[in-house]
Length: 114
Image (cartoon, rainbow, N blue to C red):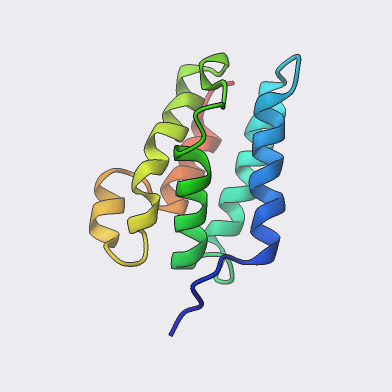
């Protein structure tokens, strides 16, 4: 059975995204780079776990203090679609339908304009 706790290395990746979002002035390239690192990890065989996907979903979707309105529409869209990330392992068809699997989000990040 899969561990119920996210990987310890995941916390620093999530915190890097949060720090980039809160930086003043905003460096959109740094936000994008930190998102790439996070979703590359979540797309890897080691990082693609239920606990990790749920942790990222919860970390960003429940944080009302993130100034997402400072981002481009395409990057705001990435955060909006993290809300189905928790379905990646247990209900993959739902995550895929919302384009919210780690791989789909990583592709969208690469395609986003900053």
